Length: 215
Image (cartoon, rainbow, N blue to C red; front, side, top):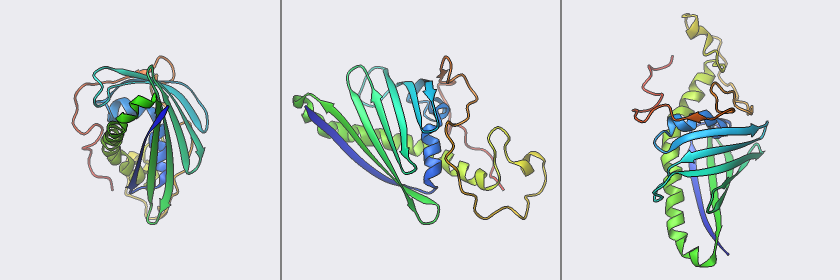
């Protein structure tokens, strides 16, 4: 057998905890990444892992791909995801390293074992994994940055920001720092954990963004 491999590193201007939240926020997949994903279903999840099924299109493959995915937060700084399809299994290992100034460095290593003649596909595998990573990364960045900003303003899931809801001035005593906790599973608002959650639309511009500036 041959092993196809790629390694990608990218800085993110938010704490690693928000990046981890993003990766375990399965409902956003068919919204933010609506051009690629059609449906997602979470079969089960606990405080550091999730088992799900995803239906998606990927570059260079002319048909819909269906894969079973097991994602495991192996530590506060590492995550392992196994994607099992009909033809192959993709293993991905993430490392999240804290950087100064509420930033982090995300490292992703992807591996796929194939029959040795298919080892010639290494350049193709490298380009495909990089293209997929940066396409979804660019779509996720605005959501991560907005999450950080609203969190600093006191945001709570399914409640919003208190002083904005109450239409009162921004409190002067908001803490300068509010560490973001890793709390899994991420709360859900759809049927993603039952029959699954399908892409709600086929066309959009800047999904979920274009909203007015926050205080």
